[in-house]
Length: 313
Image 1 (cartoon, rainbow, N blue to C red):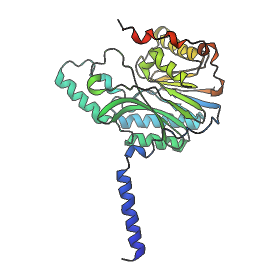
Image 2: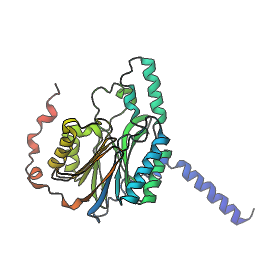
Image 3: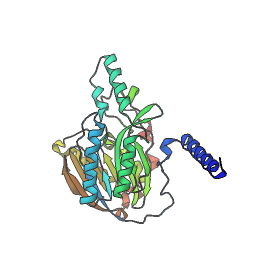
Image 4: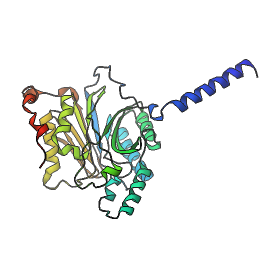
């Protein structure tokens, strides 16, 4: 074998070893990608796509997601596209809530585990490729398999197809009896730097408590995205009022999306766009317009210690 062939095969073997030893999810998970850049874009076109998924049907759901996201980017000119919580598998976690039989519950937990995706899973890679192709930021929710545990996750993908942010749902609604066995809560409230500003993401029930959004606001978030699945209807306008409150009290725009409702709200709590199931709605956001005002300057954290010590009744 001549030297050139020997060199080629040595390079091939070395490359193979490097690929095998590199964690798969490191290929396009770049959480600090924009950490050293200053904000370069102040106006961004946001799209919220209220997609109704089929439970358990990842391929069916992916085709639906891809179609709606393409519509948002190509026809609507969106720079950022938000989709609902657990959109990939159809938020299957709630299917076991009413099962009392232990054996049946264990069966469905195993089924739930079987459809969870790791961060480098095939459908996550499809989502990354779609964001790259369409040159958009894409917020995508799914049931994540991570270190033998399951998490309710939303990822922020950039126009290069890199995952630059991952948020894990921290709060569960009452009645989720399987959470100790099949569903692990997150414990952090990260914010993500992008060329258009600092982004916060919370998931569904997280919005019903004031602390997650406020923590992100204090960390500098300039816009908050809220993918959700439950609370389909907005009877008496409770969800609209809640989202307007989160925007107003934290002085940032809020973008909410579940399978039946989209809400795009400005930093003053005004509704700028409203959509129903199957619709894509848009909102041009100026992320440099956030005004902290007295709500932040007049805070007195030294008086808030009691909130950590008072037990829930």
